Image (cartoon, rainbow, N blue to C red; front, top):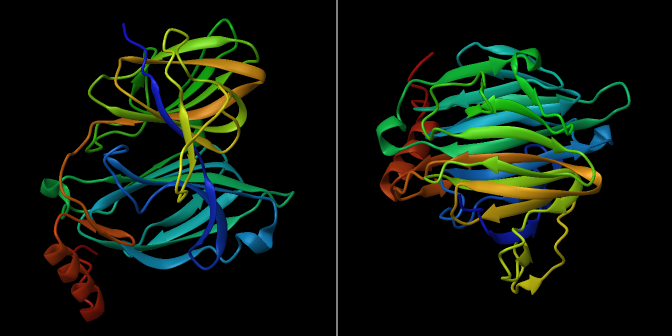
Length: 302
């Protein structure tokens, strides 16, 4: 057994997307090597409706999968295939854009005006870039929850974990997507496939993800910062933890406990040609995709 060392800790930074939605971006539109097959991760958490009500109006996707996980409020959605519906607290939408899709996502807060969810983009290999689009809409009640004697609980959205299998299947990068809660003061070790890249995103409480046997300092950076600075062991709210190689990760929860997403997937290791919501392998393919979008031939399946 080998515990994965912490390579880097970074703080998600404020940004705006869609028609002006205020959110925090943990990574995206940069070097994809460390997070391959994942391209982007956003935390859209807000309790001010004016900061999210404009939503994400109609926009295209090609060559990727988008994963939306809602914790509070609802997200109304529709697409060029005729699908439409609403995601509520605990629900998941795993959309394979494939050859191309147009869709929109419009957040609605709960009774107190709160909205909270995450969106993760996963790359598709060249062999599946032009596959037929599909949706997997998952009701929150279908997501299995595993609870340990010490109070640790894990929602298994995708992949196998502790004898439970998540409801999302047939995804290219063989990912695992877990929502993990560890009570105050408890320490847990969680298995991770050695072939996968892995990251944790803390969104409640905090803890220490370093292995006590690894004396190496951990570096932190604010996305877009020019320098790295050493930081304390404690990793708090809205922080991304990138792990090195190994077959398990460890976390020591702080005095408020810790809740985080633990996401892993097998690297695709292909060239990335990227502009906005369209991700191809070459600049020529990217140019062709945007030409089709302009000419009205982008959608291959209706």
